[in-house]
Image (cartoon, rainbow over all chains, first blue to last red; front, side, top):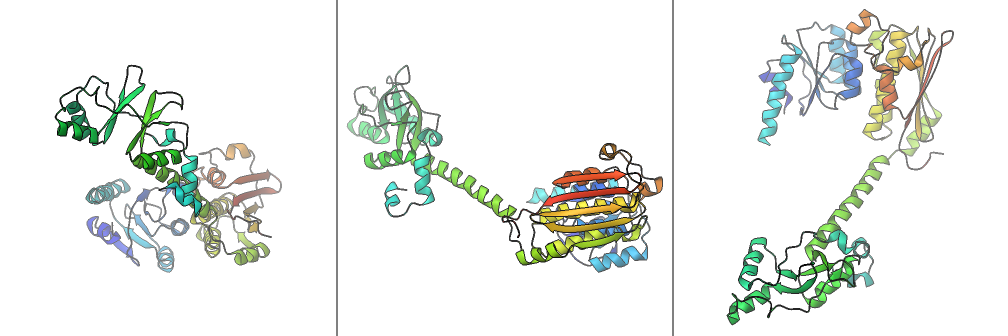
Length: 114
Length: 315
């Protein structure tokens, strides 16, 4: 599923949008080591952890897009780093559970089509 | 698929048809009849099962004859299709024992121009244990070839093309990083740089991922729990060795620290998503070998080894 479709349907705020990509799977987690151990490469990551380390984790795990939930505040440094590393940053006032649910349903529909 | 080709060139398939035994390829489910049936009954069965012939067995499953589609057609032609088969069926049956290689089955099928061979328990037995056709043999061959191909593929993945020159260079030049304690902003730097460095070597993605995870967790440990330290990443023969040293305060109980979920992290660290007690367990999980020496006086020394999966040792 195209990232832009997720952004559109879930009405996500685009903080940094540098590359369109194909999203096949997602991971939700706020513990860095957990994300390190379990997130799949190229997944979309849903989290409330909005600091520079999130970008580092995304980079190491080849995660191309992060959705920050609960409208967390992002500082300039994080945005700058994301732009440098070409990682898409999206934000929403919804909580992680809701966003995951929305994306999950969209993916189910998408797979059903195939 | 004739075995005659083997005289010209011994290919993998030629080799395999000698290795595969009839019993590996045959269908164990045998459709058969006893001799008290009519040709018409057999014709219906052949049509239903889309087969070209059935063996006729007695009470102890010994073969006593065979009825093929040709026999049925002849019966229609000559007008005895509703008669019992007993007087008409061919009693001279060509069978094949189960413990012989399929190459003999191929020869027999070709020589006698038949589509299927009933398989007997052994060469001196008439008990039927299966039936074999050319397509059974072909199916089995494909399965065997597939499994050979998978093994070759696996090997290839393990021995992905690695730039030996680059590895030689990294053997000479190791990566060294200072890691400050409590410096969250720069944390993750070691892992990022190391990852990029190894990507240039053409090592398989999976191994790079593991190296990056180990580096990240070791780096975070220095940053979160120590007064600062350093990391060295080097390639030694076939291995990446990741050293992480810190200046203290040391781990009082290493065994306990390796337990998933055990943490000494402060509330502040945990709020940032660290200190879940998964760092050392993650390292242990992703490294091929892990050694930790810790003293409350001199600090902690961690050594993690990840095999690069290079076929030949680098000299």
